[in-house]
Image (cartoon, rainbow, N blue to C red):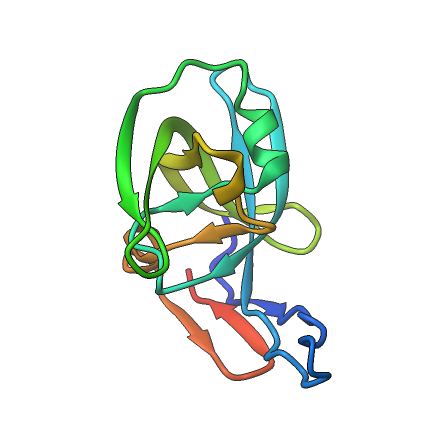
Length: 146
């Protein structure tokens, strides 16, 4: 596996309703693998506000639909809201822009809300994984240091 730093450009998040630019989003590219070997890849938002390892978006939710859940967990949302997530265990890898694996994250849990209203627009990588990685955010790029 590559031992050089990998850089990911932040993604634009557009503008809010008042026309103000929303800050760009730091990302890391992930490749996820189900037990049957089927794979999916794409960006995950670096978000220290999420306690867990990985939070699913709609695409990832459908990708995981045919594998058994490991467990369920009640998690807190914004404000006083709590909601239930199903937990799915899959293999995860950090990949570069060419989809080359640069680091294995081994088996991780993916949180999938049981209420579709709580599914994110983005895959979110949270503190449980982030705290195991060496990354640097410079305002324009996320640097992953293997």
